[in-house]
Image (spheres, rainbow, N blue to C red):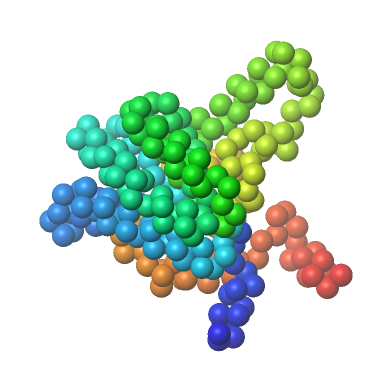
Length: 251
């Protein structure tokens, strides 16, 4: 291992969140149907999951299907759901074999019954795995997540379990999705767009944001390492000054 690799290994993020953007444009540039880009994107995701597991990254969360994606043409949505179903069936055994825990966040009840069943089976099969915590966000939106959390808290107030004065940041954090893993350290968006797109709005308050023009199907180990190297160079102050961080490191 080189000196650079050793230094990078010291600053590996605990949790990486990714918006996998650019599948359609990747296909269009090759005069292929958009679904071909999505299939290529699945292969890329498979590779990134393996890399994260190898690097001992604790959690990986990917935005697979947002609550806004229903606005796409019906034929594309149908093919995306079919691809999701077939990919889930194909990949779950390998994920389980490699001690990876697979789970899903989002409003799942809107999906076809057979897909909901497959999601439940995959979640159950891998729920005791202790390696990479791999979360797929489908029919997910950050505003939906926060709204759902407040609805649950409102019910607890109504039944007398908690009071309004007990609601604080810690309680909200424990109620939104992904409460049992560290908040994302590194956010990656491929495809050249520079926006959050309603993704993990509560959870990424202090996350480092990395944007790349690389289209998702082309996002390989070299591209991922470039993101990790960029992250390693960031100074995460969480509201403190650089001098305070230095003092804390030498205390």
